[in-house]
Length: 308
Image (cartoon, rainbow, N blue to C red; front, side):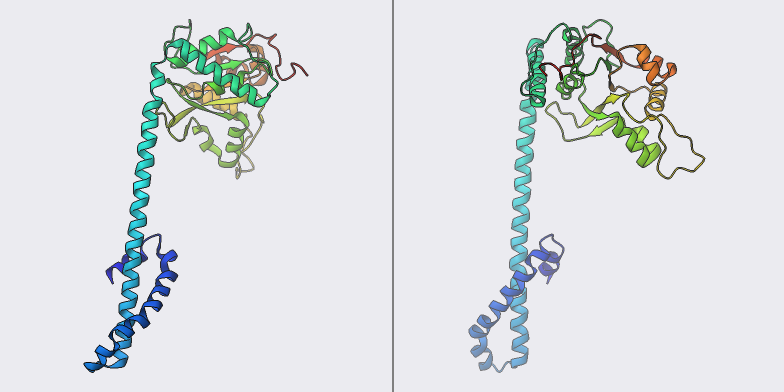
């Protein structure tokens, strides 16, 4: 009976229940045919015999499917182990790009950036030109970990500023997985919506846990996109009538200033004055202090409109 009880505790109990019943029903008449004459010879009571055969058939079926369940479970473990070892091998293989030269790393990032742009618009033209060359070089130095670009502080993230359509976001998407500090992109409005849904807990939105990437990262910093386009006056669900509406991103900036952490922001603001108009001078001045600031030229083309 022990195996019967163990089978009932496995994930296969429900799957094998009906099969076990059918096997027992199939075995019962065969057991009777095999042993009925022998039992009668020794004068075994027929009622007892029926119970005995039913128990034997039931136990055999239970033991059989318990062994099947164990085999299936073991095969699953073997397959999971194989997949893990394969994944680990791939990860270790993927670490080899860390040995790439800076020029090779640059080519990899540019290739990713080009692919992202072309995925959005197959007719798009892509080139590293005067509108993005300096900005790209700064990010390459930072995320490669050589920090040769003047004025960069690796303890800080980037505040990426520039006009609409100049490919700020697609550039950062190309850098999401990198040797130094991988990150995930979220939109400012997503964070505002999180505040509306869960309140204060949304302010802890600093890191994202995800599957391990080829650089061994499982915990990712965040890059907040579309900063300045989110709702400006919101209140948390369930807040009291007397609660005050807040500008969530502005409050997020104030809290970040008190407890600095590395993250990145992307905004269509092109100047300090734009940041002041969007939030306040208090928030704008803190942003400049908190981040490595990268500003795309104000005359950068809107690539979404090129060729339209």
